[in-house]
Image 1 (cartoon, rainbow, N blue to C red):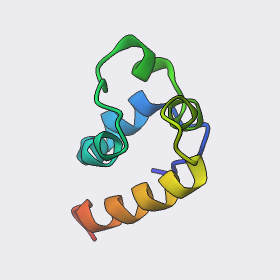
Image 2 (cartoon, one colour; image 1 turned 135 degrees about the horizontal axis):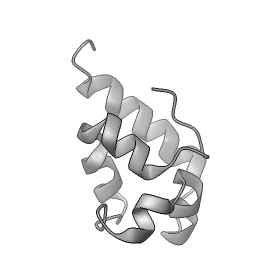
Image 3 (cartoon, rainbow, N blue to C red; image 1 turned 90 degrees about the horizontal axis):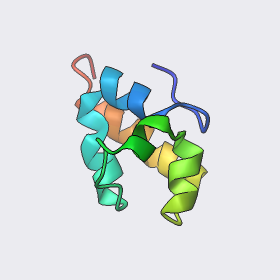
Image 4 (cartoon, helix red, strand yellow; image 1 turned 30 degrees about the horizontal axis):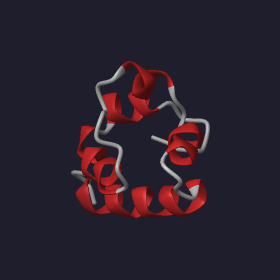
Length: 70
């Protein structure tokens, strides 16, 4: 899955549930809340005062280590 600033958090969690710890590590603990399902990565990062590019880099590295084919 390609993940960008515009990717919806709900899409990431649906397709890559193993990504939840990466979101939780930056304070996004309400992955099931209404806002999370309608937010992009960029919107959520700004709401949590996190640089979206830095988060995407960490998220992608995290997923590379947790994917079944990694």
